[in-house]
Image 1 (cartoon, rainbow, N blue to C red):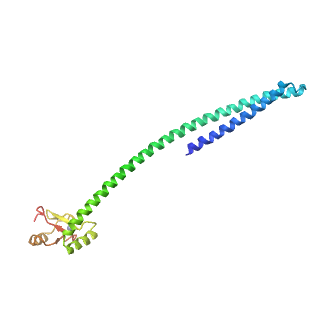
Image 2 (cartoon, rainbow, N blue to C red; image 1 turned 90 degrees about the vertical axis):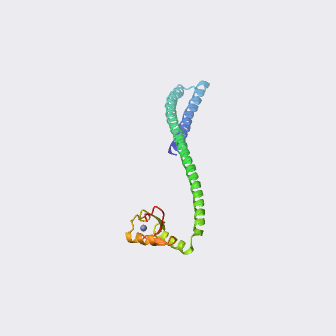
Image 3 (spheres, rainbow, N blue to C red; image 1 turned 180 degrees about the vertical axis):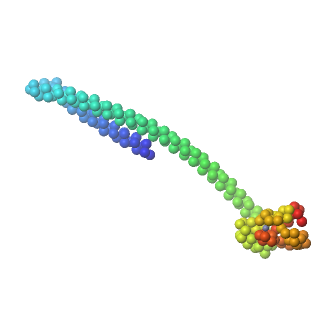
Length: 196
Ligand SMILES: [Zn+2]
């Protein structure tokens, strides 16, 4: 934006400088016309007129140098603005690309959430109501994990190895008894790898 402002500022400066040159040129042309017309006859007036024409020519040259200098600055500002505009375009392209990839990822995640939620609903419907209530309560208390696998006599919820007395109790428990970790109180899921 700063580069674009500089570009338009120098454009205005150039117009102004060109108008200055024009004014001086017109005045010199008028003087020259008067001189050529022969209307001025007094030697003193003629001399003054000629002196002014010379001085205006010098002034015009100086002002033309100003125009050239402004034009150079304007070109540099134009180049800089164009370069920055291109860079903005390239960065915007990368933003658009990342946004599209993020949106696609959101879509995938939303799809996964929907399918996992549905799966959970189906499984939850098969679990007895009081057990489900206990599980949900534990899940809330234990950072989202209400039940854990018992693996080689270790609770996979809290990673604590169970005491031998607890293991013996679990060995004796009927298959449909809900057993819990004595350490973290999570529901323990028995498998063939539980080390019982
Ligand atoms: Zn535990």
